[in-house]
Image 1 (tube, rainbow, N blue to C red):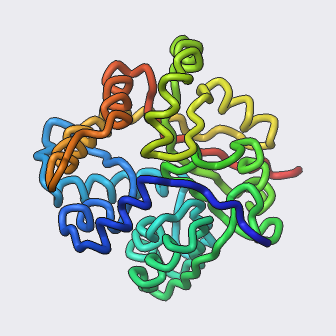
Image 2: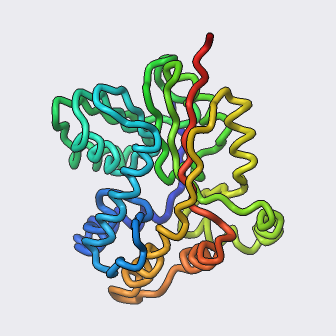
Length: 282
């Protein structure tokens, strides 16, 4: 099956920075490619090590929201450079860990970086999160760490996650979710906002509210386990990004990041961790 090519300009830039050996970028986003989580945001010091730790913390919180534990079969959709797979392999034992991504470049780097530990088995698979190349009832946990907004359809992804999960299995994800009252304004301004987003982030669909997530989960056959708002815990990501973007020649802040920070600080768009369980048939 030929996978649809997804344009992600920020990954193109990231690969170029890695090729050029930019140490700050490699240490910040060469492992995890997502926001950070600070238990106490006031302790963030803006250093690369601090951000790297925060990015690992966010991964762990999403995995814990899905009940990750020893001996499980876990699928990480949109696995990036394999940071979540590596984190799981470091923390747990006797797991079968599968990282899935539609971009073969990301998978190649993941294969180079991530080696199994603690009697775990790891594999990386090229594929579409909305057409998962796996058998029914084959995973205990499906993850989507800060990537679901790139998927062509959340509905199809939820349906596919439900299909490949064992009865009682769980789905855990994190996403940027607009407040109900803000969604109409966001949709109204999408004509102006979309070019800023697509020029850096590529295809992004943030037009889903928490109410819509609840409805989607219910119609798919999931029971909601957790809805955690960690917006405030992620805010130190933005000054760190501004600092990182200010280094190097011709450096200038990215408009899409500035806009994301503004709506996050006003909590018009919230950063949520969500987890669900597949109904156990009686």
